[in-house]
Image (cartoon, rainbow, N blue to C red):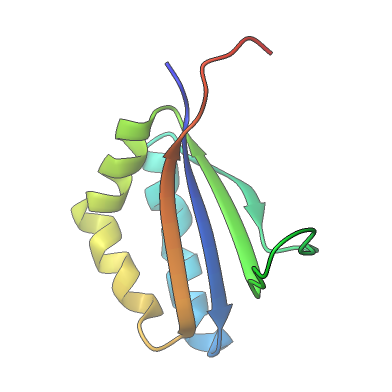
Length: 101
C-alpha cells in the first residue's frame, strides 16, 4: 500500500497563537500513524515561482489514513487554533508511489 503525504505551505504571522495549534497537532498526526518528515527548516526554490515561507511534509501509512486524520473531529477542533495565526495555510494530500526502494 502506498503512503499518503500531506504537503503544507504557510506563512505564520502570529507565532504565539500558532503555538496553540502546534501543541495539539502532533498528537492528532500520531493517532493516525502519521509522522512529520519536514517541519520548517531551510529551503530554496530551484525552479518556478513558488515562494513558500514555511514548508511541512507529513507521511501517513496510506492516503485513506491521511484523509481520516484531516477529517477527524479532534483535528477539526485543533485546526481552529491556527485561525488568525497565518497569512495563508495551504495543504494538499497526495498518494505516494508503490515502488521498490
